[in-house]
Length: 278
Image (cartoon, rainbow, N blue to C red; front, side, top):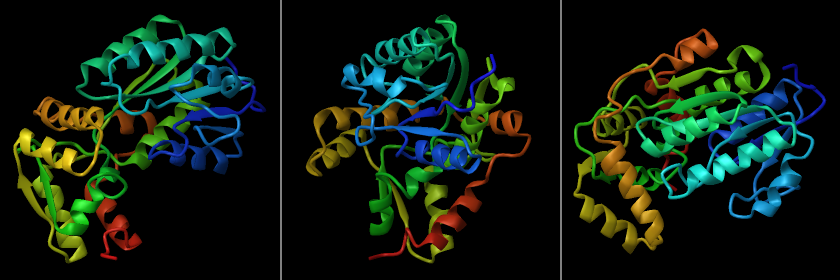
C-alpha cells in the first residue's frame, strides 16, 4: 500500500538506543517523524493506554520498540492491543523490534503476523552499544565487568545497523512481510569483548564470571527494584546460554551491505571519549 509521505512516522522509544537513531535517519531523508515517548507532545506511555490514540493519530507507520523488555509478563498482549488499535486507525505499516532466542518475543511476532498488518520484523541480537550507553558502561569505567555469563559467544549487533534496517523498512514497500534476523559479523564472548575494549582504550577492563546469585545480590545492593533485578537475571542467565551462538544475514539482506564489526564500534566509541574516566 502506498503511504502518504506527508504523514509522520511514529517511532516508539524515540529517545532510546535504536529509536533516536531511527529518528535521525528519517529526519535526514526529509521524512516527517513523531517521537513516541512520555516526554513528547503528544505523549506516549506504554503504561497509559489513554495516551495511545493521540500518539497514533494521523501517522502512516509505526516502529514498535517495547520497554522495558519483551520478556516482561503481559508484554505480548500490550503490543498486540496497540497494533490492533493502529490498524483500526488506518495505520497498516508496522516495524517490530524483536529479540533473538526469546520465546516471549517470538510469541509476540506471531501475534502481530496474525492481525494482518504490513509487518516487518527485526529480530535483534545484543546491542554493541550496551557496552557504552547502558548498564555495562559503569563497570567498564571501573575496570571490571562482572556477569553471570561463561564462554558463550554472542554476535553483538550495532544499533546503527538496526536503525538503518528499520528506517528502510518504514519507508520502502519491499520490506513488507520480511523477517530480518540481525547480528554482527563475528561471535565474541564477553571476555573477548572486554579485551577488545581494553586494547583499544589502553585501559584495563577485566571480565569476571560470577554466579547468578552474586549478580542478583549486586543489583539489589545497587538499589535496583526487584522486577528489574529479575529481568536482568533472566537476560544474562537464560537468553545468554548459547542459544544465539550463530550468525545471521539480516543486515546484508535488508541493506545489501555487511553488518558492522565490533572492532569498528569499539574504535568509534573510544574516539568519542565515552570510556574515558571522569
